[in-house]
Amino acid sequence: MKMKKSEYRLSVGNHVLGLDFQPARYADVFRDYFNCDCSHQTPDIHLRIKVIRRRTIAEIGNSLFTSKELTTKGFAMSGGLIRGRYDRRSRSGSIRSSQILTVSPTIRVFEQLLYQAFYSAVNTESNDEFLIHSCGVLHRGCGYLFVGRPGSGKSTIARLSLPDTVLNDEVCLVEFMDRGVELQSTPFNGLFTEKSAGRCHLEAVLLLQQGTEHRLTRTEEADAVRALIQEIVPPIGLDEQITQSVHGAMLDMADRLQRSVPVYRLEFQRNSDFWELIDREIAKTGGAS
Amino acid sequence: MNELKAIPVPAKGLTVRQIGDETIIVTEAGEELHTLDETGTFVWSAIDGSNSLSRILNLICTEYDVNRDRAREDLLNFVEALHEKKIVILD
Image (spheres, rainbow over the protein chains, first blue to last red):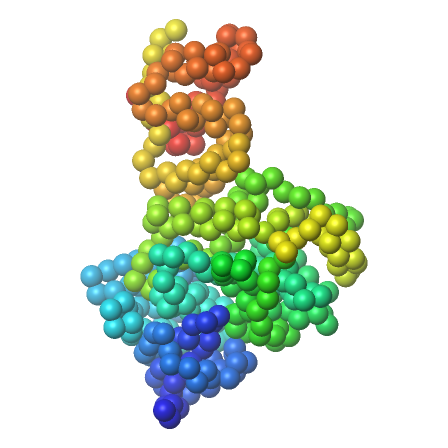
């Protein structure tokens, strides 16, 4: 089927978000930003996104999760810079977004709307897949997930890991499967252009901490869960808010991940020698293989 | 000893999971994350809205080889800390 010029289909893992922009030129803006060709698969959800120019200057918050409000008409985020509605039966919605959120660097904030769109496309009740703030690297055929707070060095790890395949330096997709846990790339953080699409077996999770030497230590279960839950992108769809049950789901996801894949704390310096340590230690103790 | 008559009750809206020997508690707003160690987990499991602090103290002294006065002091400090963090309500 021929696609409209206004349409951009964004693949995230096995799911496709159908984004239909008005004005149509924003389809090109987002395709260029994500540097991903338009998917030709049938979208899992359809969103009509109207980009509106506003002369008023509003404060842009960092989170489209905590600023989200559900109303009788739908939802509002970031003080109303984004408003919309989503109908899960028809798997379609309409969104009005201020133009200010579609330009760099605030387009990174807009991505959070697409995280929620992704969860709307996924069966969130299964909790089998989730997005996590992390840097994913495919190294010697295995996936490694570097997890840490903002400023902990995820982008540094990504740069130091090249020419290994960097799946993403900011947001990766984790999927629990019968054959194990898989790590997948995402198109998010379009500002990082050296990432590559791919998926692989997840060998280990490394909690990042910049240090004065390279050091790798296995974490205790609760330490791993506490670190991971803070980086999991809350699994809420467009028509949902963060609730107590979402906290429970995030705790369960973090616990399931640390039970499925070994979690280490990695102290590292700004050089790529940490890979020698990972190769030596994780090969010795065994990863998730 | 009056202070031991109080019955601590878990606050509403908490999300709690026991991970290994420890307990992780997420507050209702999700803004705070608290971890209880093994002993804290034992005490937390006794905070069910029916046990008084006196009863919990007896449980601790049965479970652990500990001086009762020291256990009492630690329990009161622990529950007071949970109360300040709005994790428990003291009835």
